[in-house]
Amino acid sequence: MVTVSGGTSLASASWHSALVPEPTFRLVTLIAAYTGMRLGEICTLRKEDLQTIEGVPCFLVRPHAEDNWSPKTEAGTRIIPLHSKLIEVGVMALKDNTESDYLIPSLDRSKQKDRGATLSRAFSQLKTRLGLPAEITFHSFRHTVSTQLRNANADIREIWIDRLLGHEATHKSQGTTTYLTGISIANLRQTVEAISYPETAFKKETF
Image 1 (cartoon, rainbow, N blue to C red):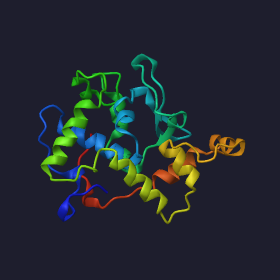
Image 2: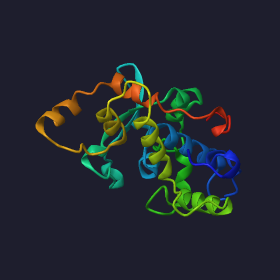
Image 3: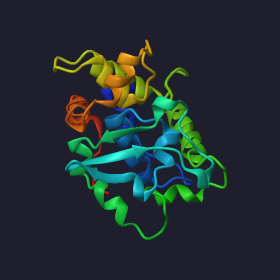
Image 4: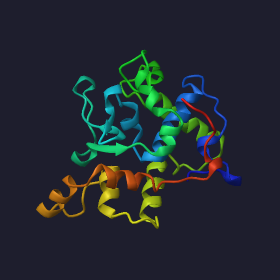
């Protein structure tokens, strides 16, 4: 986990940005920590990208022509089951917002084309204020998830982890491609549920 000295989590440090509401920062970091999604992927999620598939609430990371946005790679288009912690804090209710077509409407305040630009800058300011090294970035959440899953004791296949994170398969044989398309929502849910943090890692709140 991305932490500061003394074990205080970056995700639970006090927030001082006037440009990004604190609940928005908490929400985006929580989603990143429990999915491994990139900041840009989270910020471009639309309400229709939160769906229940085979009885499992999921995020859909996919191209959006109206924003001229698409995942970084072909493998980046994927389905990510919601971690039980995200369901617990009320992420499903984000679909009911009437402010925007986006799942996280408060990011609309940014005048940048990139919806995550303002939050990214605020995150960098927080990191600097906490005296964290330059190599710690928002992307560090993604690395943390990848490391956790690859070190998990659970019966998780590496190819499931790659599918969850949108990594290209190391060898794109016909057999691998066929297998990737056959990975079930249950497999992905089992994978995402292997992500865990100490109870003190995040502030207690609902959205």
